[in-house]
Image (cartoon, rainbow, N blue to C red; front, side, top):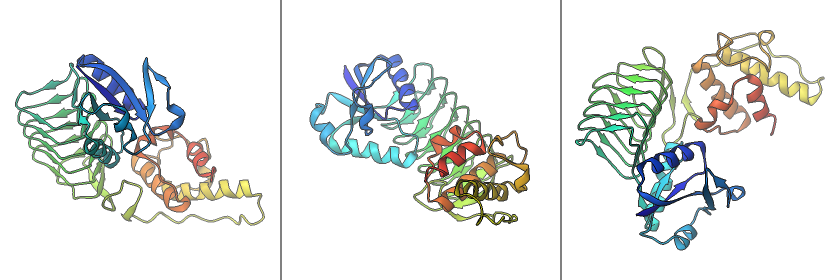
Length: 317
């Protein structure tokens, strides 16, 4: 039996640990992470070693005895890291949960994970380092190019093509014979009934490509988008810096939400305030990244429940 290194001591990493244990084919499983603070940390009974981002890990772990799986949500980073370890001589693991349903006629490349209750039907072709997450459905003759992530509960009809490093968010549905380009984000709960071009963000029912993102980046860098509505600016010159900073933030948020500053506060909650839907959420992230020079990873989106959570992020600078 071989051993397994899970690259990334993350929440997704623990899911992959559970999957690998259920498969029962690895004698030892460890985590590796670049965060030195996690070195030697015990995660669910499995140790964590440090990955310094170079070949040192390969020098300490016997090549041929260890497979690697990358537990990173960012599609491009996951693909890059998988190829780095393959160049070092490690084998890329393919993890398929015993509770997944995978056709004998499907093709799944190395580095890919298919999690519990997912379905991959006949003649589906799934590329390197993809994630077919919990309860996702990849129907017959679908093609997923390398680095694609199909989130929990997403469903693809037959003969769908998903381009390199695209992300289909939770609960989205893609109709039969649809082509999705490279570097596309399909929003949560979207219903895709027509083709989506490369480098697009598509949301809604039916899904519409609302914005375009630059090639080789994530949602954070925008080439084209609708202008944010203008809101009345307040004179902050005479205010204490902390108050001026908060007011400036709320004015920006109000512009994104199409609201008056008096209607919102740091306690305003996502989806509880009617104008703050999933589209406005993404636009707010984009505006804050532009204004404050930030980069907010997609896997962190779930941590932002109120405007105050966003303000904590920008007020650290």
